[in-house]
Image (cartoon, rainbow, N blue to C red):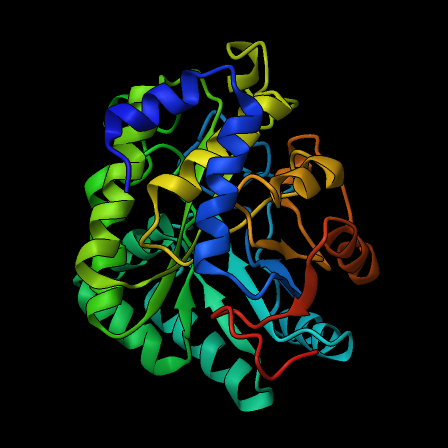
Length: 343
């Protein structure tokens, strides 16, 4: 384990090859079998109505907007069946923060899904769960426990952005605080649920602020062991209001450095995901030598990042070839990163 100061010096170093080798060594130690995993799942955005107006988001619509929607239950069920037909094992269901959808709406949806299919429900980011608790007049613990009992299997790490209140105030001041994000994940872990942690960087924050984020994630994992994976990715500026102020997106070099830094610093989290959605397939492939041991999903459907101007896409065979050509064995996994029963 390296110190915070060593991590900062690593990021500021010009020795990109050395940084990659250091991260690759940690990956080899944790994943000596040479497997890189991927998942077939689907992002289902059940509503784009949102009250938070985050400056980095091009997906949301304010309440009453003509382009706003709440997906009918049957539409969601049809999307799930299509996912299953394509070999999918899970859904990642997230949406805007809707002021009128109380917990009963979510419970009914989850129970209906589970009565129709055996799909894994990886749903509702921390801001959504805080919002559901608030509009339903419930504690966070009761909210998560009730959703778990209705069919919620695990919780995604979305809504983290940068876990530093100064950054959050600048880019998403109405969204949940750093402490609320922490509370959601610690509460879920205490209820026996697994979650992921994410980081969206490149919004003008400092390396010190990014390290604040990594320290929080590392400390939670030290206490609970509840994170299955860490997923860093960078802000996509096109079509967003924040993009007017952030003139340059993160480069491929900066992404690879952050990926490697995440792998070395978060050595208590087993899986680090190399993303292709914002950096593209070639950079993702390089990321497998910068600490990544997973390439995420083929993503049958994705609406949020694409709304901000990113349109990379990948088939299962493309991801398998990308993995093989980097010198690894491709394995399909499930949401909990289990590959032992899959080809």
